[in-house]
Image (cartoon, rainbow, N blue to C red; front, side, top):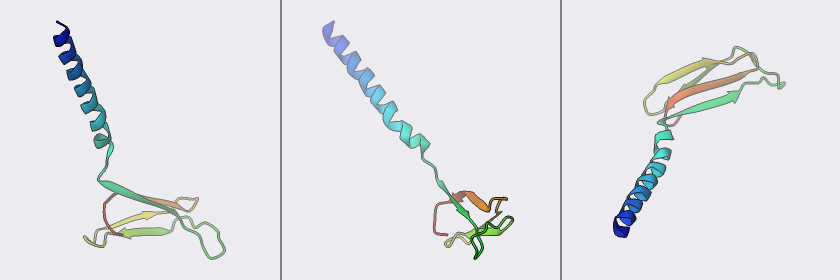
Length: 82
């Protein structure tokens, strides 16, 4: 009886370890993002500025526009060089 309990405990421990080590894999993504601030020569923010990111390998162009605070965010970009 003691041996069966030990085997069950080892199985439960192995299952818990497998679940804990797989959680980081579920949180990984296959996309990236670029965020920034557009300012002019005087340092003032530029609202409504057109910003584009071009993937060097694929040529895919992703456009966006800065918000009233001059901030832009390009999200869900394929991993690569821009």
